[in-house]
Length: 171
Image: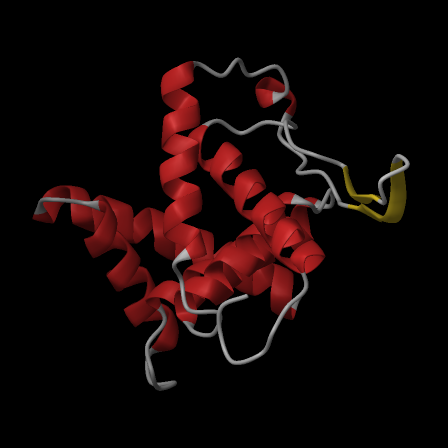
């Protein structure tokens, strides 16, 4: 129950489930994850359900549906979960994580594609609206590459991809 607004144990558990889904996906895209969260209580005479929450699954591409996780993968998932749990609940990184997870749960490619771009824009977008697309693509390409030639190629590929994003959003 960190932060100014106290949250219930169930809300914290659901948030941890979301972090796990993001971590699992980043390590190996998969359908693995929980679909139901049960809030149960033992009143001394036995266990009883207090609440059941359903969660939406992540939807991987067909090639990724049967991923096998190793112990080392689960350690990486844990590290990612801890990093996400430490994010402030407002701000660009949290917004990116939120839209990333929303995108992973969408079946229609156009919604998924746009939500992924929203996540990228929250992380790499400029603070003002001048030359937004150029600066966004430039920042992402600089982040992803280590040398100028690779940066130019990545910039051109991202620029084309951003053009597709604009086509989906604006028609």
